[in-house]
Image (cartoon, rainbow, N blue to C red; front, side, top):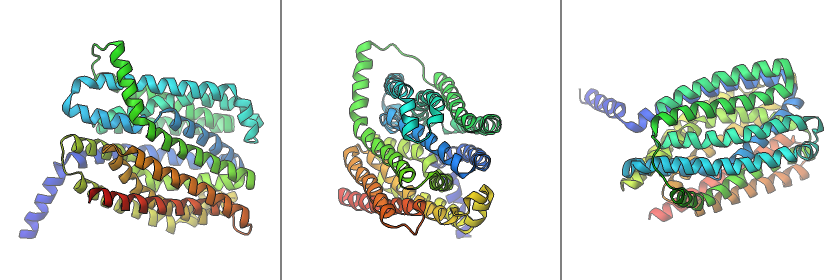
Length: 431
């Protein structure tokens, strides 16, 4: 009887938990989005083949890395400040949103222009001279991707995860339809154009929702400049670490191409899709975590208890998909086609790395919520440099093991180092 009452109390407490509700809706929307995107990715990979899919992965990753750099760390900063002022000064929400959009548009515009101008040089250096026109289209997606990142951060700070879930489902449908149709009719160029369409649709839907939630206020030019300066100052160390991540992964992909071939990059690109599945929970919940941790800090709550709960949740929810993917790795490889027969070991290492990265994500939100961005920047930069250097050493000195296996192994070692460092330092700071 007592056990039954205890379960009922736990159920009621869980049902009434804002953190649980926000996590649930964020999870539902992204499950639908990731599921449709994964299905489209498998079909695209099968139609293009390992080598051409490696080219697609290189262009897509280049877009992602440039877009991450062009947001200047605003994806985290905006969520923190929106969540903070939502509880203390709701009048500042429009100012923060406006300033963040201006910063994002300025940086992404510059990056897109440079990519457009030097598209032929980039295509030639990537050993894909025939894709220079495609890369020009990719430059357009940089702007949309950057703006969408800031918009998602605003919605996370407002804790509008239920409405965001609907948008994620709609974007999943757009991704699936655009990717299938584009690849079927136009091959590699069509697959890249699908990225542009998807990012544009995401940007428009987010904009329409934010316009309903935040009413425009009377703000002066001086107010905007002051807020822009404040956001840039706080986001600078976050931007540095995101830049090192982007540069590290991009150089790592380039290293695979130069020291091996596009086939190995194709294997790695396919494996990262499934690593993304294991990581989708911390990816989905990172804005939820940052929003609630920032609110807890603003209200001087007990963020330590919240941190432990999030660590336990992320570990449990990533362990199951990790086991499933690891057990079914050979079957997964067969789905992609005969050219992916060497995929299983790469896949297993990649999903194992995701387990450590999911725990790292929790500490990242903790450090940002408490404003310890420079410490976080140092540790993550060391991790990225370590992964890149270790990958170069392994690939150049070991010839009897596939380069993709050595590459993923280097990131596994770096992830373990990063998690151990963040955990030890966090305990020391709290003590």
